[in-house]
Image (cartoon, rainbow, N blue to C red; front, side, top):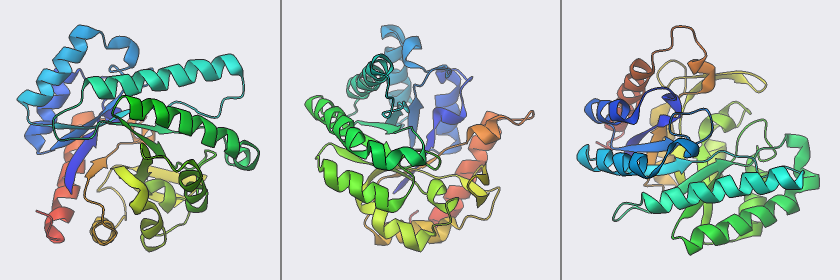
Length: 278
């Protein structure tokens, strides 16, 4: 396992600043956030910008762990759904374009919707995920679907149903354990179920139970990263552990993206060393 960081936490910092800064901190991988509102949104990434990102990753010896598309797959309006699926396919295209030797290109996305949408919409979701999986496979990319509190796909049993039903070689999981924690599901309960599907991860810190929960930066809260890493290792996961700074944290008036990234690294580095991963 290695330590990564999601540029979700740096929506305003240009990549020519963020990527070298993350490398200096010690991060070995990063996830590129391409949803609207981020400076690396798809619509901002012309050919020159994509070339710059490739060059910065290479020059700073950082792996691209995933492209984060995070666009709803549960939209009922046909026109809006077609726009969403196009955006996700374009994010898959970008993952393929930025692929690095020896690393599987990954595009990660939550599914959207609400928990109550699960039963009436799960067959539709499975069909859409399978279709995106076909597209990803044709481009040599893995689609990593993220269970996320407050969405239609919010619990381990739902995840098991979706991944077993879709049963696609290019469809795996982006496992963000913070969303299980705030649903009251412990490390020992969810890791053995979720980790075998996982090809990418997010970690945060967190307190409280959804919907009265608060996401924190790793190191600010009570989450036991050593226990988590041991459980992930025991479950056979050997990919990147990617720190993600929540929008909840980013809304703070004194939010300093670089300082929070540095805290992420210190927290994970300490835990990696404690469990013998470094």
